[in-house]
Amino acid sequence: MRCPFCGNVDTQVKDSRPAEDNVAIRRRRFCPACSGRFTTYERVQLRDLIVVKTNGRREDFDRDKMARSIRIAMQKRPVEPERIEQMISGIVRRLESTGETDVASKMIGEIVMEALSRIDNVAYVRFASVYKNFQDADDFDKFVSELRPGTVD
Image (cartoon, rainbow, N blue to C red):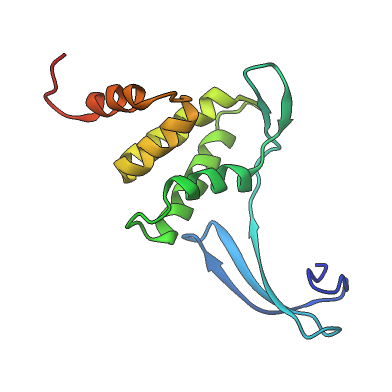
């Protein structure tokens, strides 16, 4: 593993342990060249996924890109980081287990929204506001009113 600080390719693993409910391995590494320490994670990848955008463009699925958007929605919410990681890993496993290599971006967005709705309503609304491209306060009001139980139009 290349050192992120000096670029040395000869780094040493100092500690390995299970992470994210045993779906990843966390490795603490040390670089003998610069004495830098860093952490890496190793995960099982069942297949390479391709995201098909609504405009037809195709790109490699990027777990970190999806995780960033989820973390932005979850910012300052009372949810443990481990729970967020479990949710992200669950979403990736669900996408990989579809059996398809091509996954529509719409499907990914729907799965993320479903997972967020079970964990935190505020994060769900935040994510939905970007995903559904809310334009004004009325869009928020309509969406939130659908979340309220017993609301009659």
